Amino acid sequence: MVNITNPNFKPEYDTHAAALDAHGLPSLVGASAITIKPSGDTDDYFTFSTVADVPTITPTGSTVLAIASDISLGANKLRTTNLSIFEEGASRLGLFLSDGTTPANLLMGAIAPQLADFCRVPVDAYIATYTNDSRRFGIRVPDNGVGVVEVMGFQGAADPYVQIGRDDTGVALNAVTDMLVLQAGAGTNNEAANFGLGISLKVGNAASQVEERASIDLVLTDATDASEDVELNVNLMIAGVAPAEVASFVGGGIDLPTGKILSVAGTQVVGARGAAIADAPAGGTGTAAGGWDTAANRDAAIASINAIIARLEAHGLIAV
Image (cartoon, rainbow, N blue to C red; front, side, top):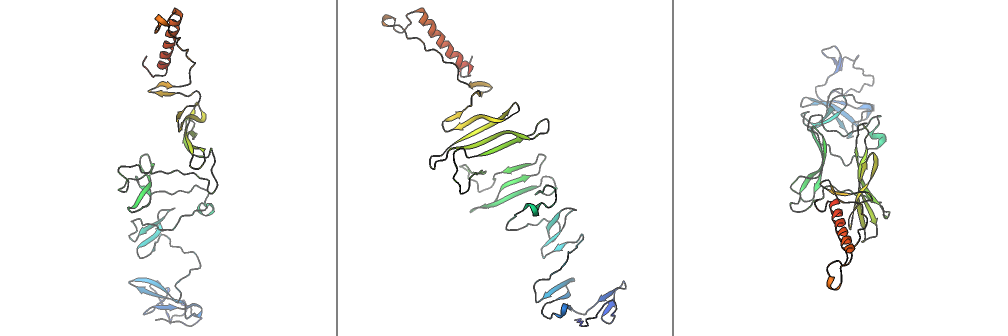
């Protein structure tokens, strides 16, 4: 072991303890490990040695080796026993297995980005898959008693898409499985009538303007505990006007706003209520029972019958 205690030791001048390498530069050479004890500290120091042909620095005393400056690795890797961390391209940091090509998993308790820390540069931040075609980024959670399953995926494709739901052996074969849950609540505050949850659907147009073209709203119409009522409203944009209600699904059926119609195969079956149709006059009495006692009553009855038929035809309920 080389042990230099001279406080004035300078390897570039002291050729007794230093040797010149092949390039004529001073080298510190020892037949065994070299112990360096800075500041005369005999309890906390480090040893420089070669282990399995790998130069190794081993702290003694403290379990921490602190470097009070930036570390520049250049294009080199930071390696552990099984993993390696290195720059993957000019703007990406890669975590791979020791072979340097197989991606490794990153295990952490939580990702808690804060705007000031997560987006320090004045550009948008992204979570992206690898650049290869058809790569997939999935989110997996435990399916109790079954295993870890994917509940959401981001799929690279000719038309990339987001997939929500499961496709695994834990899904019930003869029952409905909730695969998407949308929840709205006011925390510890009590919700009231007209509280609800909405889904906004936005699409572009010929002027490259992406705007809301439709929406679906679930509205709480009665917030009383154990007596709740809701309605599901469908809103559509028509002739460039902001989406408005075209149908409402309520407990009693389907409600259409004034001026809206219900069609089957393009034919209106339900629309605005038409004018009242006169009742057919009563028939005759006595020997004329079952018939009409006057021509006027007969003609009025025929008119009422024909009006009903015409109304049914107009609403597509009977063929013309």
